[in-house]
Image (cartoon, rainbow, N blue to C red):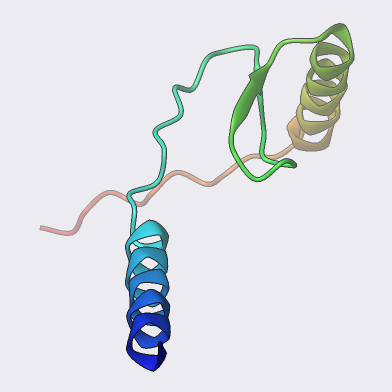
Length: 78
């Protein structure tokens, strides 16, 4: 009986280790859609609320960076 319990425990330990080393699931990135990881796995969403949130964020980023400029690199010395 003890040997059977030990074998079952070792099997559970070994099978759990393999599951944690699986490669992550590939998620195709699609323009205009969001990736939701809230349930533990990636889910591509395309709702009106998500689109409105993305549009608002893009407007905020554009407004925040409209006056940002960078100096040109000086010409290389020869």
